[in-house]
Length: 116
Image (cartoon, rainbow, N blue to C red; front, side, top):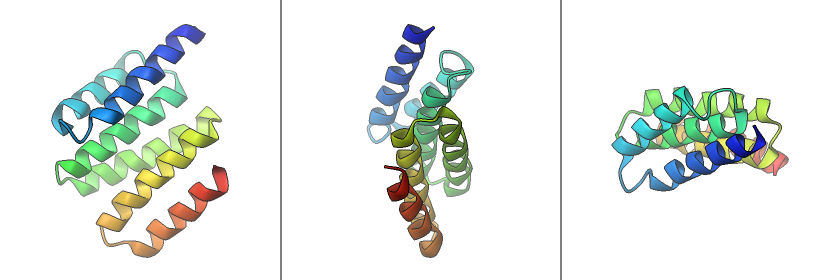
């Protein structure tokens, strides 16, 4: 199981890296990971939700992106992986800033800094 978990996390990180190149494909791959290899793996799930959030931002769907970023933060907290939790919060901060919610974005950054 540990090998499968590492593979799912590596796949989720690859999707995250691909967001700016092809956000539609990255969103589809993130959702496929969440339905398959990342299912039941909070670390991989958090990174996949983070990738989906950033892809939705690139596709100009901030409302859906914010929902997915918040989900990434919740799932990352379940993973116990502080670095993943901090990165999820930083992605949330980016989307909050894009939505004009500067104070909330700064709060998310402060929370990320406290984790990492």
